[in-house]
Image 1 (spheres, rainbow, N blue to C red):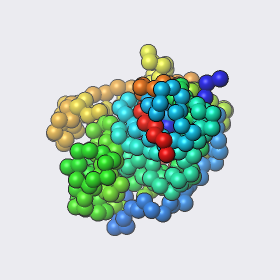
Image 2: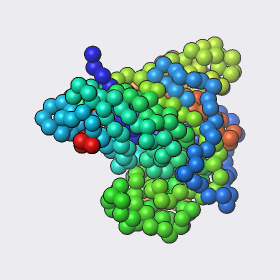
Image 3: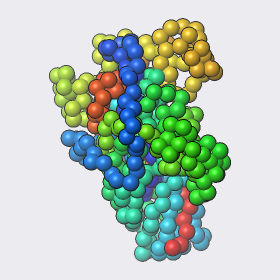
Image 4: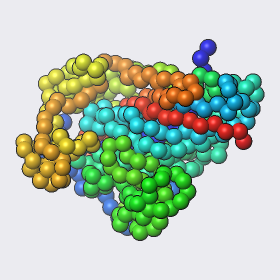
Length: 409
């Protein structure tokens, strides 16, 4: 029987997700202005873990209340030939390109990227030389990667993910299959700059080497301080560092559980009555509706995802991988405001097709890159505009590729 292990990574989601991205509007047609970001003088801090807003969802199938770090499918570098090569190992996970984060039920914050070059270390105890238990107890109250920048619909958030518990799980040295339980707190900051949601570390070319060759940008708590890059946005939103934290007040500290985060298959089914009265149509407790489509109809697309058959249309700038909201054709809302952002293009809003969200990972034998996945529920933030536009509380899904290196300890 194939065993799975633990990919500790972002997310995000992500993750981590990872909640709280979207555009402000006055209705479900996504028309209107952008919400005014919250910025006060109070600085962010990574040391104390804030009390999370606990979702009422509990543990769902392969989903939890939010999202971030468990099991990865990863590149395993054996210490000696096949198997583990030792009974006590340290496993270092490093995220690579190809991530995908989907946040909420509205579709506005789908297809977000995570961070590349984020690292997480755990201990492996391998008494039989191949099958290991994951000991991530030392991760409790430590950062999960660096600040995660997300932009959707012209609204930006910077997310600080922290392990609120140690990570546990299983890992197989030969197959690279893994499965783990990761529970994090996601502290969400709403920011005004869609091109730079988080402060960046400028001038450091080698991430995670412990050498602070960079300088924190002016919007960081420690403006001008030396920094070491701890993660690079896959969607071009900058290189972030735990030395460069965001200023201002958070708009929520969300309890997010990836239980499990797996190299196998993660599935979240719609079995909960929606707040709008739709029976068994929602994925998460407190979710208002299935989608924000006109007429409520989500049609399947060629890639198996969904789009709102009757609209609304959504405008985005062609020259940006991340989502910049635009409302007029041409360059008025894009290139004229953000050089290089291209022109405004319209497409149907995304949505979740069907009654099941499924993500499938990949185990990674030695020398290859694996993929860990999770589906989960995300609580609401304290900002109604973000909750309405993004679709929170609501489901999330994360796909996180990574490589691993093992050494004896």
